[in-house]
Image (cartoon, rainbow over all chains, first blue to last red; front, side):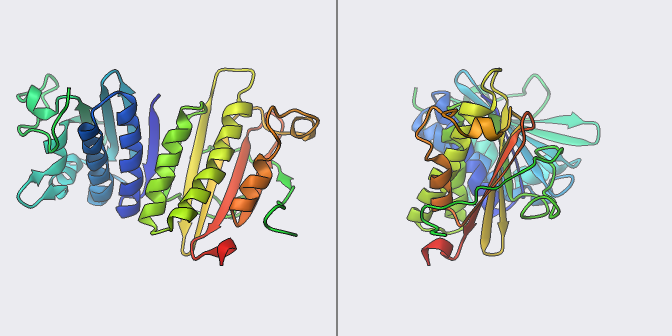
Length: 147
Length: 168
């Protein structure tokens, strides 16, 4: 069951996105720690997307599948995905979303889509270049990934 | 009218428009884009997601726990009606929940593109439930508006005053 969330970026949108993502992450059987990671990642994206979206609105498409939750953030301006990831940085931790999930950037005709993939293992388990040529996180998840 | 038990039994005709289009003051209680909109299939499993969305919204707006509880019950009831009735004879279609924060007012609209409501469907035992859904929504909100037409989908609009409203 996928969900489409359209919102104004900011603290209210962040709180809403975080809750929705956590609920869907719990549905696919992720551990409590990874559910919390999903909440943090979605909240960070929706909170900090103000300078990255092509217009003023952010659309998050959340697609749960077996053991995985994929979040697509769109429509981002060119370079918007990178700006969004940088904006989510936490002092001493670095870019938060990349610490929590695998990320990649897909191109659209007139912009970008930030794809965030959360599974049981976190980004450390699949570090290295991804098939699509996008980025792959190099650090482990913030919380412990239980089996 | 006693706000605890009464509700406005007015059903306005549904407008032809995209459920995700910005609200217009001409036909909607509010105008402009929503603060947040969620599109989900109209199935029972979606209610949990809607409730979590409302919890996040209520916490971000610094609402009291009791107010968030009322919000969740009222909107869940509207969504449950949608899941039960909107796509009764077909595969489950989409359901939209729009939240509009305007100064000290929160409007929530639950919209579907299902079979809609008419006089026959509203009465004469058409509902398998107790028939308390609409009074419950009205009792827990500061205003309830319904918009529907046969085969034209349904819209439930709920207003909540963020500074207490009905509770003050």
